[in-house]
Image 1 (spheres, each protein chain N blue to C red):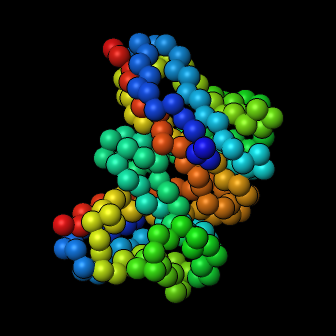
Image 2: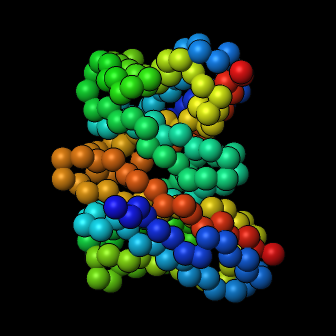
Length: 111
Length: 114
C-alpha cells in the first residue's frame, strides 16, 4: 500500500463547476498536509497547506482535513480552464520534514 | 523576492559520466530538500539539509548519489557514473522552518542519461 494515495484521473469538470480532489494517507501520525499544482513540464506550485482538522479556505480553494479518517481533500470552486493541471497531495510525518507525495490527480476543466 | 533557482535546467549525460546539479534556495531559508520525479509520478524524497547539516539522506537510491551544502546556502547534488535509470527531473525545495512548513520548489533539472 502506497503511503499517500490519489485517484490518477483524469477528473473532467465543466467550466464553473466544483472540482473535488481526494487523498488518503497511511501514517496516522502525520502532522502537515499540502496541495501542489503542477502544470505539464513545470515544477510543483504550492496552493494550500493545512495542519489541523477542518476546512481552510483561500479564494476559490478549500482544503479539508480529517485526521481520524486519514483523508485530505481539495475543492476548487468556479473551475477555470487554467486550473487544468496535475494536483499533488503531499504529507509530512513531522513539521518541517520531508514530504511524501501521491502520484497526482489530473484535472481537466472543459470550457 | 527571488524564488528557488536550479541549474542547469537540462542536462544530457552519457552513461557513466558524473553530473552535478545546483540549487540556490530562497534567501534565508534554513531547510533544503532534494526530490526526484519520474514521469507520471509524484516527487520522491532524496535528502534534506538544515543549514549545512545533512539530517536525512535515506532517500538517496545508491552510493552514487551525494549531496552537500557546505555553507548552509547553495546545495549541489552529485551523481557519479550515471545510469539510464537516473533519468528524471531533480527538484530542489526550500522552507523557513519558522512556524511555517511550506516547501517551495525550484524549476527542476531534467537529466537525461543516454
